Length: 314
Image 1 (cartoon, one colour):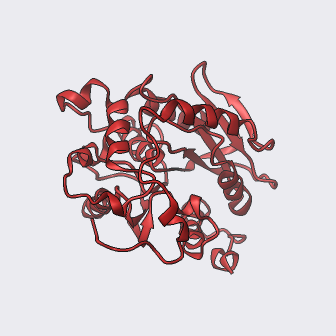
Image 2 (cartoon, rainbow, N blue to C red):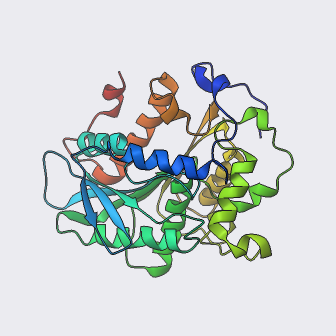
Image 3 (cartoon, rainbow, N blue to C red):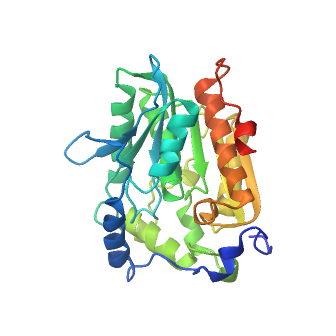
């Protein structure tokens, strides 16, 4: 992990905690999440896909036949969060790119360890691909943090099953490698929000018994998956002051070595979830614009009315 100060535009870094999610704080954080969920955007249609899985659907104002779509997976260390937490981001994508965005409500660990959260995401992907207004050949999958790790696992699972072929995996500081929990060379003073302690709790909750015996399924921790060939193109973004920096850079390079087109965006001095916490900073806006540009290219291609992302940023 690089020895680099926080990005000068990320002024909140010095006030933020190093550790946010632990076994002790989880019950309180979940109660707060439920309260915040009541303020979800009213323009999201909530659909029960099965008895256990629901989705929040954001449709663009101007519909078109066979619309491209994004399946979005929220973060929260595998143990926290809900489909409503990224509503503003999902609505922005739907409106600016003129695509359908679906945020999945997957079941959380430790009550529901692997493979349940990943299976829930695949259930949502199947549902999305089967919607009459969606083009199943133009579906992207993406997420933040743990959600991005699930998106990477979902890309692998989709390749294994051969039923749906996503056109892009959009991975913002993905949680990919449980082996990071054993690292002894990490300086926690360089971290914010997600610390080694949080990481051990999150992975232990998600992997369940596999965390103790070391028999970790590769689909649970995508960095363990040996063959990355044939996966969808990827966009991976991470800051240098993020615990996941090294594993994300390694995964991006492995994708490239396997012949998978992969764009890697590294933000000097960026901490975990910086783009959401300090959304107004220029470095955060540029990070998000890069994601929208990648999505626009993958979902809309050379369409005549393609949004000029660079113009939106000004």
